[in-house]
Length: 207
Ligand SMILES: [Zn+2]
Image (cartoon, rainbow, N blue to C red; front, side, top):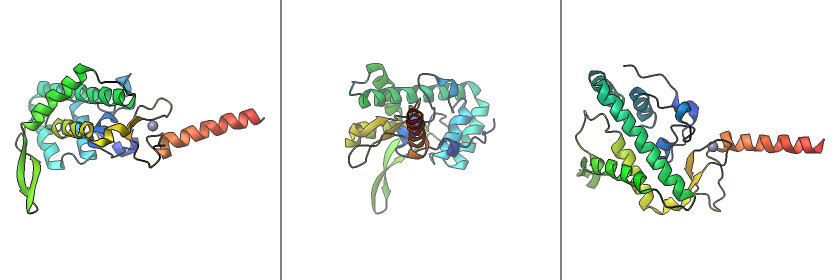
């Protein structure tokens, strides 16, 4: 199994919160045909891109996946199910709607698995959380993702979740602007496209 040289930088990750970057690993949620994550190797490639796993950890998981292709496919499917559940929860919240119970269940199941691997360790003269064990667990990258979603839901930032206003863009972001006026995932991408469209319509109506 090979890691595709897919450049996630080209799809312009926002690098906000890990769980948001994960939901933004596909352009659309209503149609997953254009998904950037189509295999377990794609999932590992994404982990590298967001610095979730080191190169040696990715190579270790790739080798493990080669030996157990069915388990790798199951881990990949679990990742997509978790991603879509997190998206559905956050999208509902952004619309002031309660999330569906089955989506919360999916997240809670992943959180339970994650917490079994979380321990307090001495760090920098104090203590910190660390992911311990499970080096061979093909779904280990989902633990910090689920944790990130849990942290976001418990934080004040949950009120700032927005879906991009861009045409056919479904990316999630946090509107931390002072007057809560952020409309686009990325001004350079969706913002400029919207401006160009407005300009086009204005110049057409002028003539
Ligand atoms: Zn957008």
